[in-house]
Length: 102
Image (cartoon, rainbow, N blue to C red):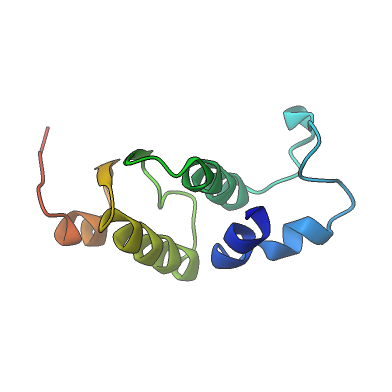
């Protein structure tokens, strides 16, 4: 399942790096970019496959291509679950069924 999500997030190249994703990593070594970390955190949420998902700025630290991909995945997943998103992303805000401005 992890390989499916790595491919969906377009970071399947991480599985080919010299370190293994199933081992503990020293985060002080910073082996991942900010965008890679963002997508890995999203994968962790998706693997839990809960009926409620909460995302805090899910498209931050991503380039335009990755941002579009994440939006598409979240939109697709939100059809089958309650999804709460804190975001400044205007496109995510526009596709939301309900918006609460604070």
